Image 1: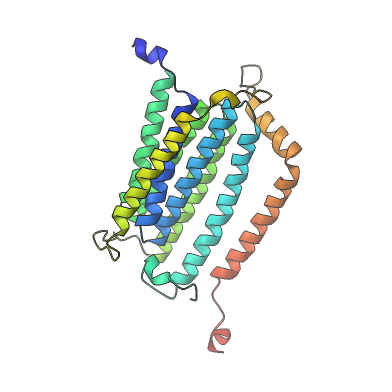
Image 2 (image 1 turned 180 degrees about the vertical axis):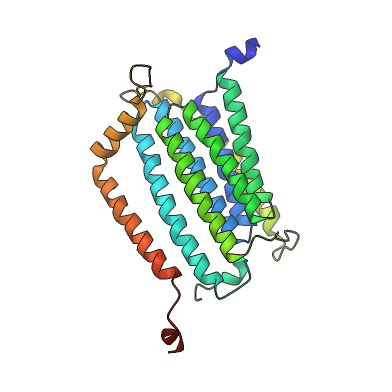
Length: 107
Length: 179
């Protein structure tokens, strides 16, 4: 129990967690072929970066890191909306849900 | 106590992230994504970013994942995918190598970096019983003060995204298709 009281997570721990999440997201984008799951992995990478921004914000005692996360959230929402719109309009013509079939952008 | 919260939240985040990658059913992948997002929200609270934790749960877990689920259900791609088919044989080993290399490089960079640059800002005010909204006030001062122009630009960005999506996803009238 004394160990739990003494050891406190430092800035590096949060940054390493962020690195692990980012790498998992990267592997997901590289491995998966379903465009929707690839999108989710991109969200994962965005979240890893948000985590490191918040960590730096606390480490440097500067609130600007947190406002950067706010803008990342807004851009991520816009990106998801546009990306899913593109996926819906592509899927309406093709039934296969694989990124291999989408090597050309032309519907 | 901090350590327990960190370990539990990071376990949630990592288990969810692995679930997004390895789950065969897209609906299960979306649910794993929710687990990750909640874990990250807990870590945000731990770091004193209370406003962002709330926004994370509302916007990400609430809106974006529901949007994913809507599209999965609408397109009917919710059947399990066969992950054993692998058209490019080198792809998975290569992806694993890249992932491990990325973790190694980033961790090395973090652990060898000079921490002298830390603690240089004006200071974050943490919420107290007298002012429970300290974090929200601070972010508001930053967004509507220093970054107000960028904030206004994001409204244009959202408008463009909405209009563009409506145009992308609408069905063409019959006569236009015939042309």
